[in-house]
Length: 99
Image 1: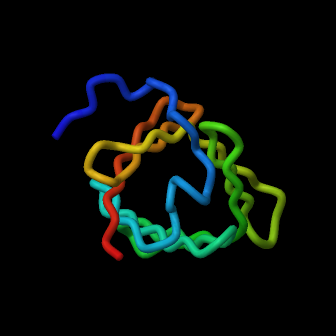
Image 2: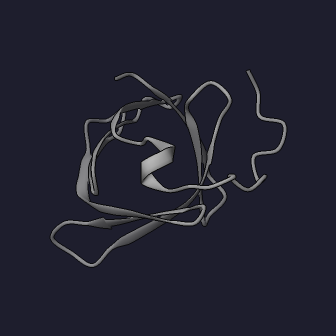
């Protein structure tokens, strides 16, 4: 399944109705575990980041524990229940729910 317009705004992107709690697998091998406002992100090379997250409109803000690094992604829910996340650099990642 492909996205017809990855920049189409989400109807609403709040944690309560977007339902991001769970374990997500990216097409590139990344795994993200989300519970409430906490996350653990592991890439295909077994490197991991953890911290707090917040959804503001159609943007996902992730603050890394232990430093002041913040990653911001523009997110969109996909028709299959997953989501895409686009970074400021233009990298687009697609995730599907595992659990």
